[in-house]
Amino acid sequence: DVKVTQSSRYLVKRTGEKVFLECVQDMDHENMFWYRQDPGLGLRLIYFSYDVKMKEKGDIPEGYSVSREKKERFSLILESASTNQTSMYLCASRWGLAGVSEQYFGPGTRLTVT
Amino acid sequence: AQSVTQPDIHITVSEGASLELRCNYSYGATPYLFWYVQSPGQGLQLLLKYFSGDTLVQGIKGFEAEFKRSQSSFNLRKPSVHWSDAAEYFCAVGGISNTGKLIFGQGTTLQVKP
Image 1: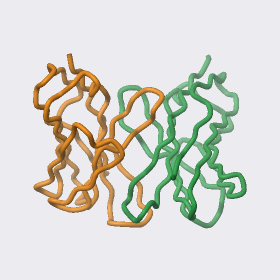
Image 2: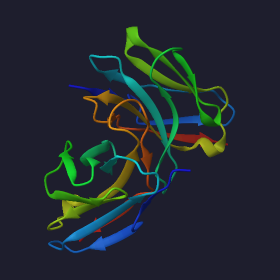
Image 3: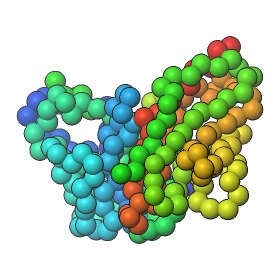
Image 4: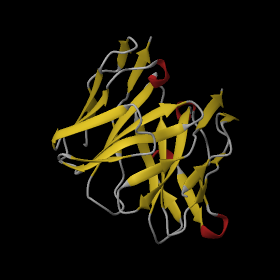
């Protein structure tokens, strides 16, 4: 079974803190994704990566950055957390650089910024 | 631009009743279509997917979906709902620019009455 794990299920941070969310997949997938999930808005793509050290902006990259130093690990960074970044963050991975394979999701990290 | 619409934010059905969740998409080319389910506190799990061929696809947990190109729809159905089906359901479209990106609908929350 594909396994995507996220470092924390719940996280509480203060405004202005630097926040790291970690995601690890164990299936040697090329593609990895970070989404945020908000009620009524579904999932919105923040960043994705199709190879080590490669990244592309998604639909809402402002206020976020990412790092992919190893194939299995994809980190989301909030340089200076703000209250409007309080949300559920979901990581996903996918086999292949193109085509039709599905994405596999981690359990999510619920981040609260106070 | 590509988009996915799930017209129903909340649906309540009685246990044992049939279910249909609606999904409409906007995409110029042949879409890759997915339905995911998210149980409370969990990540997303793939229910089924459509890429080509037979327009009626079978998934896990007794779900099926029908692709109708003329209506730009991919509705999810189940003939008899169980209490454990209570969850949030997301429709998604992929195959965008060979990036593996998915665009998600807003989600439909299903409540099951005993």
